[in-house]
Amino acid sequence: MTRAIQTFTKYLNSKDLKLTKERKAVLQEIFLHKGHLEAEDILHSLRRKKKRASRATVYRTLDLLVDSGMVRKVDLGHGHSHYEHVLGHTHHEHMICLKCGKVIEFSDKEIERSLKQMCKKTEFKLTSHHLQVFGYCRDCR
Amino acid sequence: MTRAIQTFTKYLNSKDLKLTKERKAVLQEIFLHKGHLEAEDILHSLRRKKKRASRATVYRTLDLLVDSGMVRKVDLGHGHSHYEHVLGHTHHEHMICLKCGKVIEFSDKEIERSLKQMCKKTEFKLTSHHLQVFGYCRDCR
DNA sequence: TCCACTATTGCGATTGAATCTCAATCTCAA
DNA sequence: TTGAGATTGAGATTCAATCGCAATAGTGGA
Ligand SMILES: [Mn+2]
Ligand SMILES: [Mn+2]
Ligand SMILES: [Zn+2]
Ligand SMILES: [Zn+2]
Image 1 (cartoon, chains in turn blue, green, brown, purple):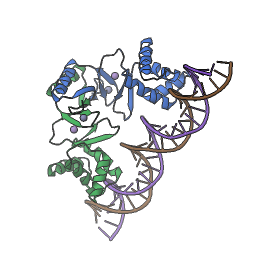
Image 2 (cartoon, chains in turn brown, red, green, purple):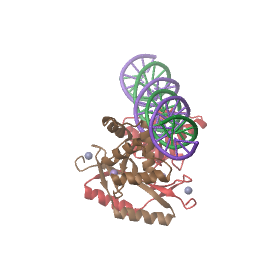
Image 3 (cartoon, chains in turn red, green, cyan, blue):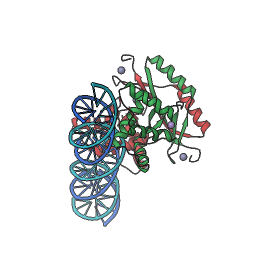
Image 4 (tube, protein in one colour):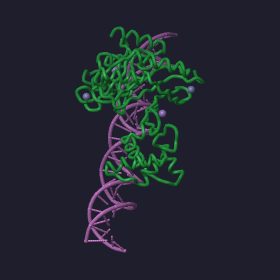
């Protein structure tokens, strides 16, 4: 967490921005939780703790966090965005169960390798990628 | 095209639905174009040809087409959906250039294989997957 | 300390895609 | 021809996300 705050501060400084208490609160909220949060989750969670940040500020801060590379915006097929922190986590993909909604994280060296290979061949400079796998989990199939 | 109409008719019959002229018009629009269309493109294109279908009907028909497996809903990172016809096309993924917006289609046996493997291992019954690769194309890198 | 300047915030309005409601229209079989 | 049910279209509605702008907080210099 201290680590996250340091990294974010560094990023903010590089952009001539400041670590305000609102920004810090959003940062903490997302780094405290393990899973995939939506903006509204963060808002509610903050409200419960009597800290506050407006919806606009939450979204604005999330944009900064994504831009800094500390947070990833993920699409779980809900029609709106989820966010997860990335610092200290290895890159992974998502399997989403169409019945129970469970999200299973996985990573696959082979896929990463093949993808890099393909981008090289196409002379495409990869900056990020997202893989969503839809289907039914062990319990629901 | 005749092929597409046949397939759609069959699907509709199986659901006790009918091939109306509006549904046919939407079908034709999407099968006439090569690329990735958004709902609004279809609306405009129809309007230009003096055919008509309301926005609601366009969306409703697109849902049917997706459900039938003839059309795929794709996310190109624009914040709204695009659609492409699938009948007679092999499955492919998308590279999206963050500068010029170009969409490069590719398919990779290795990735498909690894993914199936991973799902098997996880006992996850795969129904569909989407891979978006963001970066810069040859001309923009 | 006080002031002035700027960055930041919060509220509420706004946007835009997508969906919904429901009356009008169409289809088709009896 | 008639009526039940399917389908459509217009406009209202939803909902995430963004925007505009006045109020506020924080900073550095006088
Ligand atoms: Mn994840
Ligand atoms: Mn495509
Ligand atoms: Zn499940
Ligand atoms: Zn490009």
